[in-house]
Length: 450
Ligand code: FAD
Image (cartoon, rainbow, N blue to C red; front, side, top):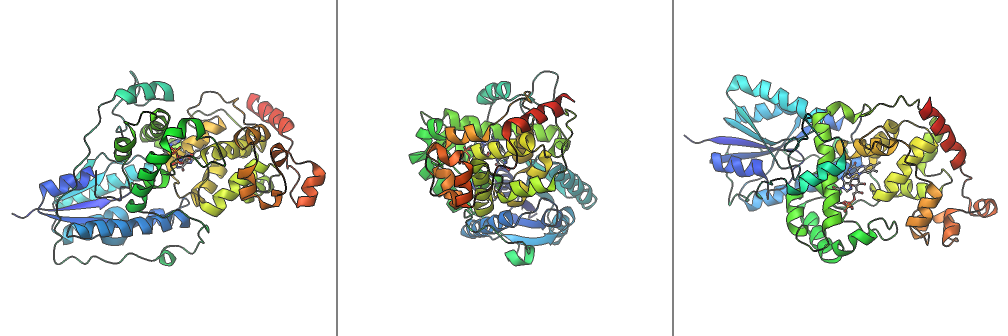
Protein backbone atom coordinates (compact mmCIF):
# COMPACT_ATOMS: atom_id res chain seq x y z
CA UNK A 1 0.00 0.00 0.00
CA UNK A 2 1.21 3.50 -0.78
CA UNK A 3 2.08 5.30 2.43
CA UNK A 4 1.56 9.02 2.74
CA UNK A 5 3.24 11.15 5.41
CA UNK A 6 2.99 14.81 6.33
CA UNK A 7 6.05 16.85 7.32
CA UNK A 8 4.98 19.96 9.17
CA UNK A 9 7.60 22.68 8.95
CA UNK A 10 7.60 25.05 11.90
CA UNK A 11 10.89 26.83 12.61
CA UNK A 12 13.04 24.38 10.66
CA UNK A 13 12.69 25.92 7.20
CA UNK A 14 15.21 23.85 5.25
CA UNK A 15 15.47 20.54 3.41
CA UNK A 16 19.01 19.65 4.53
CA UNK A 17 19.74 18.21 7.97
CA UNK A 18 16.02 17.93 8.61
CA UNK A 19 15.50 14.67 10.54
CA UNK A 20 11.69 14.86 10.28
CA UNK A 21 11.81 15.20 6.49
CA UNK A 22 14.48 12.51 6.10
CA UNK A 23 12.46 10.07 8.17
CA UNK A 24 9.15 10.85 6.42
CA UNK A 25 10.78 10.31 3.01
CA UNK A 26 12.27 7.01 4.19
CA UNK A 27 8.96 5.71 5.58
CA UNK A 28 6.48 6.92 2.97
CA UNK A 29 6.47 7.06 -0.82
CA UNK A 30 4.39 10.25 -0.82
CA UNK A 31 5.29 13.19 1.41
CA UNK A 32 3.29 16.38 1.93
CA UNK A 33 5.57 19.26 3.03
CA UNK A 34 3.22 21.53 4.94
CA UNK A 35 3.49 24.92 6.59
CA UNK A 36 0.57 26.26 8.62
CA UNK A 37 0.38 29.96 9.43
CA UNK A 38 -0.62 29.54 13.04
CA UNK A 39 -3.34 32.05 13.96
CA UNK A 40 -2.27 31.89 17.60
CA UNK A 41 1.20 33.22 16.66
CA UNK A 42 0.10 35.71 14.01
CA UNK A 43 -2.42 37.39 16.28
CA UNK A 44 -0.59 36.83 19.59
CA UNK A 45 1.16 39.46 21.71
CA UNK A 46 4.59 38.32 20.48
CA UNK A 47 3.85 38.71 16.76
CA UNK A 48 6.24 40.87 14.76
CA UNK A 49 6.08 42.36 11.27
CA UNK A 50 9.88 42.11 10.99
CA UNK A 51 9.86 38.40 11.77
CA UNK A 52 6.83 37.74 9.57
CA UNK A 53 8.67 39.38 6.68
CA UNK A 54 11.72 37.21 7.37
CA UNK A 55 9.47 34.14 7.60
CA UNK A 56 7.87 34.84 4.21
CA UNK A 57 11.28 35.20 2.55
CA UNK A 58 12.42 31.98 4.20
CA UNK A 59 9.31 30.11 3.05
CA UNK A 60 9.97 31.30 -0.51
CA UNK A 61 13.41 29.71 -0.32
CA UNK A 62 12.01 26.53 1.20
CA UNK A 63 9.48 26.22 -1.61
CA UNK A 64 12.25 26.61 -4.20
CA UNK A 65 14.32 23.91 -2.47
CA UNK A 66 11.30 21.57 -2.39
CA UNK A 67 10.57 22.22 -6.07
CA UNK A 68 14.15 21.22 -6.88
CA UNK A 69 13.32 17.87 -5.26
CA UNK A 70 10.17 17.49 -7.37
CA UNK A 71 7.68 18.71 -4.78
CA UNK A 72 6.49 22.06 -3.42
CA UNK A 73 5.39 23.63 -0.18
CA UNK A 74 1.75 23.23 0.78
CA UNK A 75 0.50 26.25 2.69
CA UNK A 76 -2.51 26.69 4.94
CA UNK A 77 -3.63 29.16 7.58
CA UNK A 78 -5.69 28.51 10.70
CA UNK A 79 -5.68 26.76 14.02
CA UNK A 80 -2.44 24.75 13.79
CA UNK A 81 -3.38 21.28 15.05
CA UNK A 82 -6.81 21.18 13.40
CA UNK A 83 -5.34 22.33 10.08
CA UNK A 84 -2.57 19.71 10.14
CA UNK A 85 -5.10 16.96 10.83
CA UNK A 86 -7.39 18.23 8.08
CA UNK A 87 -4.55 18.16 5.51
CA UNK A 88 -3.47 14.71 6.73
CA UNK A 89 -7.00 13.38 6.25
CA UNK A 90 -7.36 14.94 2.79
CA UNK A 91 -4.05 13.37 1.75
CA UNK A 92 -4.96 10.03 3.41
CA UNK A 93 -1.76 10.24 5.44
CA UNK A 94 -1.17 7.90 8.35
CA UNK A 95 1.77 9.76 9.87
CA UNK A 96 2.75 13.33 10.73
CA UNK A 97 6.42 14.21 11.32
CA UNK A 98 7.38 17.41 13.13
CA UNK A 99 10.49 18.82 14.83
CA UNK A 100 10.37 18.87 18.58
CA UNK A 101 10.29 22.39 20.03
CA UNK A 102 10.60 23.85 23.49
CA UNK A 103 8.17 26.68 24.17
CA UNK A 104 4.92 26.32 26.09
CA UNK A 105 3.01 27.09 22.89
CA UNK A 106 4.91 24.38 21.00
CA UNK A 107 4.16 21.84 23.76
CA UNK A 108 0.50 22.79 23.78
CA UNK A 109 -0.06 22.57 20.05
CA UNK A 110 1.78 19.24 19.86
CA UNK A 111 -0.52 17.86 22.56
CA UNK A 112 -3.53 19.16 20.61
CA UNK A 113 -2.19 17.57 17.43
CA UNK A 114 -1.75 14.19 19.13
CA UNK A 115 -5.26 14.36 20.60
CA UNK A 116 -6.88 15.36 17.31
CA UNK A 117 -4.86 12.96 15.14
CA UNK A 118 -5.35 9.82 17.26
CA UNK A 119 -9.08 9.24 16.50
CA UNK A 120 -8.19 9.13 12.78
CA UNK A 121 -5.40 6.61 13.23
CA UNK A 122 -2.76 9.22 12.34
CA UNK A 123 0.52 8.79 14.21
CA UNK A 124 2.51 11.84 15.29
CA UNK A 125 6.31 11.53 15.37
CA UNK A 126 8.63 14.21 16.74
CA UNK A 127 12.29 14.62 15.77
CA UNK A 128 15.35 16.55 16.88
CA UNK A 129 16.64 19.39 14.75
CA UNK A 130 16.14 22.67 16.57
CA UNK A 131 19.24 22.42 18.81
CA UNK A 132 22.68 20.77 18.63
CA UNK A 133 22.01 18.65 21.73
CA UNK A 134 18.35 17.85 22.36
CA UNK A 135 16.80 19.43 25.48
CA UNK A 136 16.81 16.85 28.27
CA UNK A 137 19.52 14.72 26.61
CA UNK A 138 22.01 15.78 29.27
CA UNK A 139 20.86 16.48 32.81
CA UNK A 140 22.59 16.89 36.17
CA UNK A 141 21.81 14.29 38.79
CA UNK A 142 18.55 15.01 40.58
CA UNK A 143 17.17 17.58 38.10
CA UNK A 144 15.56 17.64 34.67
CA UNK A 145 17.71 20.54 33.43
CA UNK A 146 20.88 22.50 34.11
CA UNK A 147 20.29 25.78 35.94
CA UNK A 148 23.84 27.11 35.51
CA UNK A 149 25.63 27.50 32.19
CA UNK A 150 29.26 26.43 32.92
CA UNK A 151 28.57 22.83 34.02
CA UNK A 152 26.10 22.48 31.15
CA UNK A 153 28.74 23.69 28.71
CA UNK A 154 31.29 21.14 29.98
CA UNK A 155 28.84 18.25 29.50
CA UNK A 156 27.52 19.65 26.21
CA UNK A 157 31.00 19.68 24.62
CA UNK A 158 31.29 15.90 25.03
CA UNK A 159 27.63 14.97 24.57
CA UNK A 160 26.84 12.54 21.73
CA UNK A 161 25.42 14.29 18.65
CA UNK A 162 23.07 12.90 16.10
CA UNK A 163 24.50 12.58 12.56
CA UNK A 164 23.58 15.29 10.03
CA UNK A 165 20.38 14.03 8.34
CA UNK A 166 20.73 13.38 4.58
CA UNK A 167 18.49 15.38 2.22
CA UNK A 168 16.03 13.10 0.36
CA UNK A 169 16.95 12.63 -3.32
CA UNK A 170 13.41 13.33 -4.50
CA UNK A 171 9.95 13.91 -3.06
CA UNK A 172 6.51 13.11 -4.47
CA UNK A 173 3.41 15.15 -3.66
CA UNK A 174 -0.12 13.68 -4.06
CA UNK A 175 -1.64 14.91 -7.34
CA UNK A 176 -4.93 15.98 -5.82
CA UNK A 177 -3.58 18.24 -3.09
CA UNK A 178 -4.10 21.98 -3.47
CA UNK A 179 -0.78 23.65 -2.56
CA UNK A 180 -2.49 26.90 -1.49
CA UNK A 181 -0.72 30.24 -1.76
CA UNK A 182 1.72 32.00 0.53
CA UNK A 183 -0.05 35.12 1.84
CA UNK A 184 1.52 38.53 1.40
CA UNK A 185 2.95 40.43 4.32
CA UNK A 186 0.03 42.85 4.20
CA UNK A 187 -2.45 39.98 4.43
CA UNK A 188 -0.75 38.91 7.65
CA UNK A 189 -0.04 42.18 9.43
CA UNK A 190 -0.83 45.87 9.21
CA UNK A 191 2.28 46.79 11.24
CA UNK A 192 5.19 48.46 9.46
CA UNK A 193 8.59 46.76 9.11
CA UNK A 194 11.91 48.29 10.12
CA UNK A 195 13.61 50.02 7.17
CA UNK A 196 16.82 47.92 6.98
CA UNK A 197 16.11 44.24 7.54
CA UNK A 198 18.28 41.19 6.97
CA UNK A 199 17.08 39.02 4.09
CA UNK A 200 15.57 35.69 5.16
CA UNK A 201 16.07 32.23 3.71
CA UNK A 202 18.45 29.35 3.39
CA UNK A 203 20.54 30.78 0.53
CA UNK A 204 21.33 33.90 2.52
CA UNK A 205 21.99 31.82 5.68
CA UNK A 206 24.61 29.75 3.87
CA UNK A 207 26.13 32.74 2.14
CA UNK A 208 26.58 34.40 5.54
CA UNK A 209 27.82 31.24 7.20
CA UNK A 210 30.45 30.61 4.51
CA UNK A 211 31.57 34.22 4.33
CA UNK A 212 31.70 34.63 8.08
CA UNK A 213 33.56 31.40 8.77
CA UNK A 214 36.14 32.41 6.15
CA UNK A 215 36.55 36.01 7.27
CA UNK A 216 35.04 36.52 10.73
CA UNK A 217 35.34 33.41 12.86
CA UNK A 218 39.08 33.64 13.55
CA UNK A 219 38.70 37.12 15.05
CA UNK A 220 35.47 36.41 16.93
CA UNK A 221 37.11 35.79 20.31
CA UNK A 222 38.88 39.16 20.25
CA UNK A 223 36.28 41.29 18.50
CA UNK A 224 32.79 39.97 19.29
CA UNK A 225 32.21 42.76 21.83
CA UNK A 226 33.34 45.54 19.49
CA UNK A 227 30.08 47.42 18.98
CA UNK A 228 31.13 49.36 15.90
CA UNK A 229 33.00 46.39 14.37
CA UNK A 230 29.79 44.35 14.08
CA UNK A 231 32.09 41.33 14.19
CA UNK A 232 29.55 38.63 15.04
CA UNK A 233 28.00 36.12 12.65
CA UNK A 234 24.44 37.54 12.51
CA UNK A 235 23.23 33.99 12.11
CA UNK A 236 20.66 34.27 14.90
CA UNK A 237 17.54 34.90 12.76
CA UNK A 238 18.52 32.03 10.45
CA UNK A 239 19.02 29.75 13.44
CA UNK A 240 15.74 30.91 14.96
CA UNK A 241 13.74 29.90 11.87
CA UNK A 242 16.00 26.97 11.06
CA UNK A 243 17.07 28.23 7.61
CA UNK A 244 20.31 26.58 8.65
CA UNK A 245 20.52 23.93 11.37
CA UNK A 246 22.73 24.46 14.41
CA UNK A 247 24.43 21.16 13.56
CA UNK A 248 25.25 22.46 10.08
CA UNK A 249 26.73 25.58 11.67
CA UNK A 250 28.80 23.37 13.98
CA UNK A 251 29.93 21.25 11.01
CA UNK A 252 31.18 24.31 9.12
CA UNK A 253 32.75 26.14 12.06
CA UNK A 254 33.45 23.52 14.75
CA UNK A 255 36.76 22.24 13.37
CA UNK A 256 38.17 25.75 12.93
CA UNK A 257 41.22 26.31 15.16
CA UNK A 258 39.69 29.43 16.73
CA UNK A 259 36.07 28.23 16.93
CA UNK A 260 35.98 27.92 20.75
CA UNK A 261 34.40 31.26 21.73
CA UNK A 262 31.80 31.00 18.96
CA UNK A 263 30.88 27.41 19.80
CA UNK A 264 30.39 28.53 23.40
CA UNK A 265 27.78 31.06 22.22
CA UNK A 266 25.97 28.37 20.24
CA UNK A 267 25.87 26.39 23.46
CA UNK A 268 24.08 29.28 25.21
CA UNK A 269 21.29 28.77 22.69
CA UNK A 270 20.98 25.09 23.63
CA UNK A 271 21.29 25.97 27.31
CA UNK A 272 18.31 28.32 27.27
CA UNK A 273 16.31 25.86 25.13
CA UNK A 274 16.76 23.12 27.74
CA UNK A 275 15.77 25.56 30.52
CA UNK A 276 12.58 26.56 28.71
CA UNK A 277 11.74 22.97 27.74
CA UNK A 278 11.82 22.03 31.44
CA UNK A 279 10.28 25.28 32.71
CA UNK A 280 7.94 26.68 30.00
CA UNK A 281 6.45 28.98 32.64
CA UNK A 282 9.83 30.78 32.84
CA UNK A 283 9.02 32.47 29.53
CA UNK A 284 7.08 35.15 31.40
CA UNK A 285 7.48 34.28 35.09
CA UNK A 286 10.66 34.91 37.07
CA UNK A 287 12.90 31.84 36.86
CA UNK A 288 14.35 32.83 40.26
CA UNK A 289 11.84 35.18 41.89
CA UNK A 290 13.59 37.87 43.91
CA UNK A 291 10.56 39.83 45.03
CA UNK A 292 11.57 42.87 42.94
CA UNK A 293 9.06 45.73 43.00
CA UNK A 294 9.23 47.15 39.48
CA UNK A 295 8.12 50.66 38.69
CA UNK A 296 5.17 51.38 36.44
CA UNK A 297 6.85 54.24 34.56
CA UNK A 298 5.39 54.78 31.09
CA UNK A 299 7.50 57.89 30.50
CA UNK A 300 10.78 56.05 31.19
CA UNK A 301 9.72 53.05 29.10
CA UNK A 302 8.78 55.31 26.21
CA UNK A 303 12.12 57.19 26.33
CA UNK A 304 13.98 53.86 26.38
CA UNK A 305 11.96 52.47 23.45
CA UNK A 306 12.51 55.60 21.36
CA UNK A 307 16.22 55.81 22.19
CA UNK A 308 16.10 59.21 23.92
CA UNK A 309 17.36 58.35 27.41
CA UNK A 310 20.33 60.72 27.21
CA UNK A 311 22.77 57.77 27.46
CA UNK A 312 24.36 57.57 24.00
CA UNK A 313 25.16 53.85 23.90
CA UNK A 314 21.70 52.94 25.20
CA UNK A 315 20.04 55.17 22.63
CA UNK A 316 22.26 53.80 19.85
CA UNK A 317 21.25 50.23 20.72
CA UNK A 318 17.55 51.05 20.82
CA UNK A 319 17.70 52.95 17.54
CA UNK A 320 19.63 50.11 15.89
CA UNK A 321 16.79 47.81 16.99
CA UNK A 322 14.15 50.12 15.50
CA UNK A 323 16.02 50.54 12.21
CA UNK A 324 17.37 47.03 11.64
CA UNK A 325 15.25 44.70 13.76
CA UNK A 326 18.61 43.60 15.17
CA UNK A 327 20.91 44.72 17.96
CA UNK A 328 24.48 43.79 18.86
CA UNK A 329 24.65 41.40 21.83
CA UNK A 330 26.73 43.80 23.94
CA UNK A 331 24.18 46.55 23.31
CA UNK A 332 21.32 44.16 24.22
CA UNK A 333 22.96 43.59 27.60
CA UNK A 334 23.55 47.32 28.16
CA UNK A 335 20.02 48.43 27.24
CA UNK A 336 18.42 45.57 29.20
CA UNK A 337 20.45 46.44 32.28
CA UNK A 338 19.55 50.10 31.86
CA UNK A 339 15.81 49.41 31.66
CA UNK A 340 15.72 47.05 34.63
CA UNK A 341 18.39 48.49 36.93
CA UNK A 342 18.58 52.21 36.13
CA UNK A 343 14.90 52.70 35.31
CA UNK A 344 13.55 49.86 37.49
CA UNK A 345 11.10 48.87 34.77
CA UNK A 346 9.96 45.23 34.67
CA UNK A 347 12.05 43.05 32.31
CA UNK A 348 8.81 41.77 30.74
CA UNK A 349 8.11 45.21 29.21
CA UNK A 350 11.58 45.17 27.63
CA UNK A 351 11.25 41.57 26.45
CA UNK A 352 7.90 42.38 24.80
CA UNK A 353 9.39 45.36 22.95
CA UNK A 354 12.33 43.24 21.76
CA UNK A 355 9.99 40.49 20.54
CA UNK A 356 7.98 43.04 18.56
CA UNK A 357 11.07 44.11 16.63
CA UNK A 358 13.84 41.49 16.64
CA UNK A 359 14.17 39.40 13.47
CA UNK A 360 15.79 36.77 15.68
CA UNK A 361 13.15 37.21 18.43
CA UNK A 362 13.02 33.88 20.19
CA UNK A 363 11.11 33.18 23.38
CA UNK A 364 13.88 31.08 24.98
CA UNK A 365 16.85 33.26 24.03
CA UNK A 366 15.06 36.56 24.48
CA UNK A 367 13.15 36.06 27.69
CA UNK A 368 15.81 34.05 29.47
CA UNK A 369 18.56 36.50 28.46
CA UNK A 370 16.35 39.31 29.73
CA UNK A 371 16.05 37.51 33.02
CA UNK A 372 19.79 36.81 33.08
CA UNK A 373 20.40 40.56 32.88
CA UNK A 374 17.53 41.52 35.19
CA UNK A 375 18.81 39.18 37.90
CA UNK A 376 15.75 36.90 37.97
CA UNK A 377 17.17 34.26 35.63
CA UNK A 378 19.92 31.68 35.45
CA UNK A 379 22.64 34.15 36.49
CA UNK A 380 22.84 33.83 40.24
CA UNK A 381 24.25 37.33 40.73
CA UNK A 382 21.55 40.06 40.89
CA UNK A 383 24.23 42.69 41.62
CA UNK A 384 25.73 42.62 38.14
CA UNK A 385 25.41 46.24 36.95
CA UNK A 386 26.31 47.66 33.55
CA UNK A 387 27.36 51.32 33.81
CA UNK A 388 26.23 52.63 30.39
CA UNK A 389 28.91 55.31 30.15
CA UNK A 390 31.74 52.96 31.12
CA UNK A 391 30.39 50.27 28.77
CA UNK A 392 30.16 52.76 25.92
CA UNK A 393 33.75 53.93 26.39
CA UNK A 394 35.01 50.37 26.66
CA UNK A 395 33.17 48.73 23.77
CA UNK A 396 32.80 51.74 21.47
CA UNK A 397 35.95 53.73 22.34
CA UNK A 398 35.85 55.94 19.24
CA UNK A 399 32.09 56.47 19.42
CA UNK A 400 31.55 55.07 15.91
CA UNK A 401 28.63 52.83 16.95
CA UNK A 402 26.89 55.74 18.66
CA UNK A 403 27.41 58.13 15.75
CA UNK A 404 26.11 55.50 13.29
CA UNK A 405 22.79 55.28 15.13
CA UNK A 406 22.49 58.65 16.90
CA UNK A 407 23.23 61.18 14.16
CA UNK A 408 22.74 64.19 16.50
CA UNK A 409 26.03 63.24 18.15
CA UNK A 410 27.96 63.10 14.87
CA UNK A 411 30.15 66.13 15.74
CA UNK A 412 31.62 64.33 18.80
CA UNK A 413 34.65 62.03 18.91
CA UNK A 414 36.02 59.36 21.26
CA UNK A 415 35.09 59.42 24.95
CA UNK A 416 33.21 62.72 24.54
CA UNK A 417 30.64 60.82 22.45
CA UNK A 418 29.66 58.83 25.51
CA UNK A 419 29.85 61.65 28.03
CA UNK A 420 28.70 64.79 26.25
CA UNK A 421 28.57 67.80 28.55
CA UNK A 422 25.38 69.75 28.85
CA UNK A 423 26.31 72.61 26.51
CA UNK A 424 27.21 70.14 23.74
CA UNK A 425 24.02 68.16 24.36
CA UNK A 426 21.92 71.28 23.95
CA UNK A 427 23.83 72.34 20.84
CA UNK A 428 23.33 68.88 19.30
CA UNK A 429 19.65 68.67 20.28
CA UNK A 430 20.46 65.59 22.36
CA UNK A 431 18.53 65.05 25.64
CA UNK A 432 19.89 65.25 29.19
CA UNK A 433 20.10 61.83 30.94
CA UNK A 434 16.67 60.83 32.26
CA UNK A 435 18.28 59.43 35.42
CA UNK A 436 21.67 59.81 37.09
CA UNK A 437 23.25 56.34 36.96
CA UNK A 438 24.71 56.11 40.49
CA UNK A 439 21.59 57.47 42.19
CA UNK A 440 19.44 55.11 40.12
CA UNK A 441 21.56 52.10 41.06
CA UNK A 442 21.34 53.04 44.75
CA UNK A 443 17.54 52.91 44.36
CA UNK A 444 17.78 49.56 42.57
CA UNK A 445 19.88 48.12 45.40
CA UNK A 446 17.39 49.42 47.95
CA UNK A 447 14.50 47.86 45.98
CA UNK A 448 16.42 44.58 45.83
CA UNK A 449 17.09 44.65 49.57
CA UNK A 450 13.44 45.40 50.29
P1 FAD B 1 26.98 35.46 17.49
O1 FAD B 1 27.76 36.19 18.48
O2 FAD B 1 27.58 35.27 16.14
O3 FAD B 1 26.63 34.04 18.14
C1 FAD B 1 26.31 32.89 17.35
C2 FAD B 1 24.97 32.33 17.77
O4 FAD B 1 25.02 31.90 19.12
C3 FAD B 1 23.86 33.34 17.71
O5 FAD B 1 23.36 33.45 16.41
C4 FAD B 1 22.85 32.74 18.69
O6 FAD B 1 22.09 31.72 18.09
C5 FAD B 1 23.75 32.11 19.74
N1 FAD B 1 23.94 33.05 20.86
C6 FAD B 1 24.86 34.01 20.98
N2 FAD B 1 24.75 34.64 22.17
C7 FAD B 1 23.70 34.06 22.79
C8 FAD B 1 23.07 34.26 24.05
N3 FAD B 1 23.50 35.18 24.93
N4 FAD B 1 22.01 33.49 24.35
C9 FAD B 1 21.57 32.55 23.51
N5 FAD B 1 22.13 32.31 22.32
C10 FAD B 1 23.17 33.05 21.96
N6 FAD B 1 19.27 35.80 20.77
C11 FAD B 1 18.34 35.33 19.92
O7 FAD B 1 18.66 34.48 19.07
N7 FAD B 1 17.05 35.75 19.99
C12 FAD B 1 16.63 36.68 20.90
O8 FAD B 1 15.44 37.02 20.93
C13 FAD B 1 17.59 37.21 21.78
N8 FAD B 1 17.24 38.18 22.68
C14 FAD B 1 18.20 38.65 23.56
C15 FAD B 1 17.83 39.59 24.54
C16 FAD B 1 18.76 40.08 25.43
C17 FAD B 1 18.34 41.07 26.50
C18 FAD B 1 20.10 39.63 25.36
C19 FAD B 1 21.12 40.15 26.32
C20 FAD B 1 20.47 38.71 24.41
C21 FAD B 1 19.54 38.20 23.51
N9 FAD B 1 19.90 37.23 22.54
C22 FAD B 1 18.94 36.73 21.69
C23 FAD B 1 21.24 36.63 22.52
C24 FAD B 1 22.24 37.35 21.59
O9 FAD B 1 22.22 38.73 21.81
C25 FAD B 1 21.98 37.08 20.11
O10 FAD B 1 21.84 35.69 19.89
C26 FAD B 1 23.12 37.59 19.26
O11 FAD B 1 23.32 38.95 19.46
C27 FAD B 1 22.82 37.34 17.79
O12 FAD B 1 23.83 37.84 16.99
P2 FAD B 1 24.80 36.87 16.21
O13 FAD B 1 24.03 35.83 15.47
O14 FAD B 1 25.71 37.73 15.41
O15 FAD B 1 25.56 36.15 17.39
